[in-house]
Image (tube, rainbow, N blue to C red; front, side, top):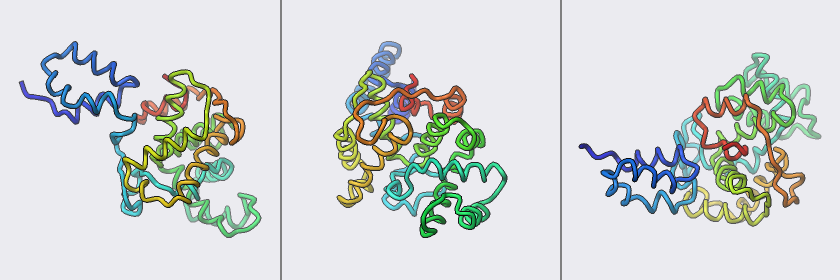
Length: 267
């Protein structure tokens, strides 16, 4: 029989399994003829960190300007385009009214809808919100962010953030999701430090970030947890349980992002 491609086997295991080592053993028992191939990649399956292999549609880019529109990348833009719940909720409502980017930027600026003390960064923030909200091309998700309860909207926005930026996605899945999986309700900033260090060892664009930018990335990730409802404050060490709505779970599954669900305490 024709031998299967090891990379396709590996992708299938990484995409569907929360415990890849268990899945490996199950497949070995069912399909012993694949033993040689599986053994040749067993180290990659069992011992790697959860996000070592690119997920569907993901691109590791050294220069984020080179990424095609709609391609999630590892980008330090989160240091300036942070969680921004109120701003994203405002833009989401305007999107549902049928307004385009130009109209939204003009209305937000003219009416100071973000209620910022100065207009210096209003345009860039409005554009960042627009890009995040339209990234998934999912009206139901935008509606949840615009009109859902605060807790539902924040989790929906977090999902949109994860879809757009792989730093956020990997952190939420590999650090927070793993804590939920093993029942560890303790969070420490050292968790973030270890994550960024490991990420820098495998993603070239992250390894090239300055020390100051790395510091900001760590800070933004912790702040993101607090704003999304995972921590009471940025200084909290207790990881809170979150409960995504059935609609959000459905959206995540329908978009093929079931591997993100551990980040929302769904297994």
